[in-house]
Image 1 (cartoon, rainbow, N blue to C red):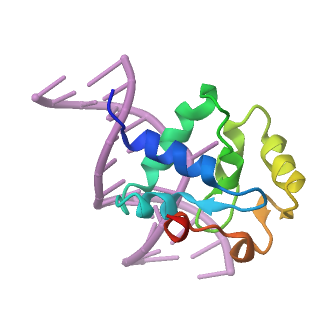
Image 2 (image 1 turned 180 degrees about the vertical axis):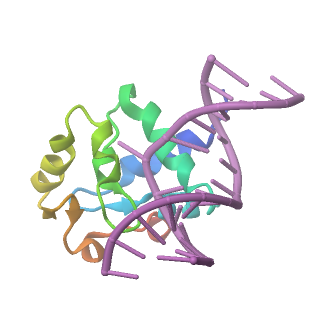
Length: 108
DNA sequence: TTAATGACCTCCG
DNA sequence: TCGGAGGCCATTA
């Protein structure tokens, strides 16, 4: 199987530095698929059993909201992981999201 | 090949 | 300000 959109997503997600977060749309856009923001989330669905582990908890929606937290082993896992990275989560939302935002296109 | 799905994003009321 | 509906596009069955 050739390097599909998935692999691109996985690679970028793995490049997310500790304590940083990004959005699905930003990843999709950096891949040149601006409109396929949903594909990023879809890829994450398969990223569950991949190795090395994909820090999907560092990927949130445009509002910095933990929309996909229910897809983790436990809904609290995502928030806990982010807090463990030094981030602050309130109401399933990342505080200072803009400050901790990591733009893949900026690194690539 | 066709049809259905999805951890999103944006617009309209 | 809040809620609902549509659109994008690749992957899977």
